Length: 166
Image (tube, one colour):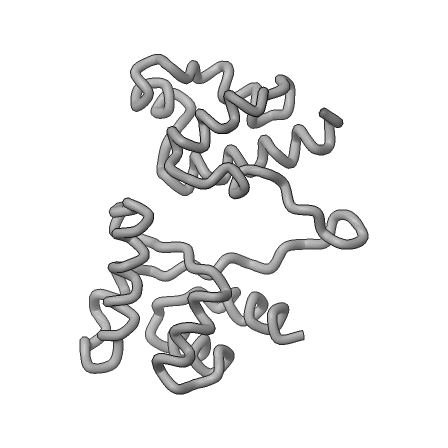
């Protein structure tokens, strides 16, 4: 495994772990010692090669598909990925249901499917935004502006939508 690939893989591992609110020691505790903090940390730094078997087991531990852990190949090398679309679930709960009802139900469904109940934020994909735009009978860019106005999406989401539409 090339060191660049190992570092990219490690960055993905770290991103998944931190999205789940876990420290390295938290991983060790949650796994009841199956995953040692020092080992997971060395995978994340790209200092230690991870076998396919161990990667599959780690993906299972995190509750994500293996492909989510694999580095993507961007055309032309290291293109900056578009910003993630992250819903602020706490702000969403404050938006009146007559406006946000469809989004609240959609987010609850995603949480249920992922088993992700941290209750604070939820990452959604571009496909999710397009589906929501159909539900709201708006273009993705107009819906994005509305969600930013509600305080549910960060203003950086504009770049993700612009990247998708270009």
